[in-house]
Length: 106
Image: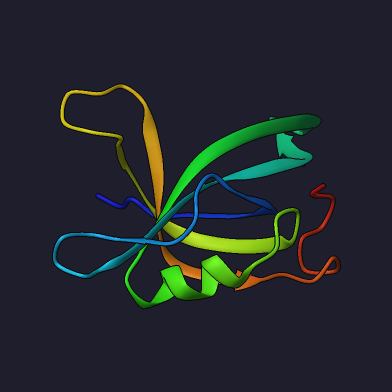
């Protein structure tokens, strides 16, 4: 089975960079996506917000990104906590994205 997601959108940090008791850097934020996708041969408008968790060295890069900047995130989905139905995108790649590379995303 595969659990991989890639989204491009606008970054909205929810907190400042923090550190776990083991001194691992962590930052949580939201990615705002708005765009058009193909579904069953038709154009569909999609708007969503998804929670993002960035851990380790990538958290420093995420912490330097300005709110509202366009980013590309690749990672996997996991429950917010054990037994939760809420999903969080755990970033394995977090980078600035150009307007051209993000298609019709807002």
